[in-house]
Image 1 (cartoon, rainbow, N blue to C red):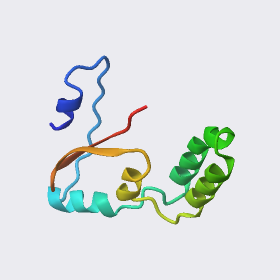
Image 2 (image 1 turned 90 degrees about the horizontal axis):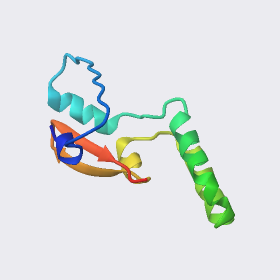
Image 3 (image 1 turned 30 degrees about the vertical axis):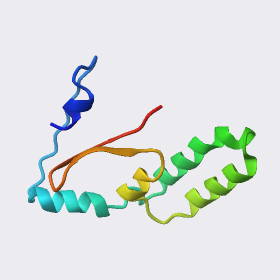
Image 4 (image 1 turned 90 degrees about the vertical axis):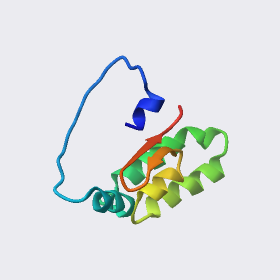
Length: 101
């Protein structure tokens, strides 16, 4: 798995499996088009995450928070534009996303 390149050793391991009766390419394409924020939870969490910066840059931070709360969807591409990076990808099969912090 691609993830093994980034975490060859680990302290704790859990495994969760959901079997999907569809071709891998279809599931992979759907992942890129899915709205991960249908109910607004992701936008709210991203807005809260920005609040500590209010003390340093109040105007810019407040504008960022308002922008996050106005979005109507949050896709994988949006996630990559807000603090996460695509670490590895096997197109049509697998991807690894990460954040530093």
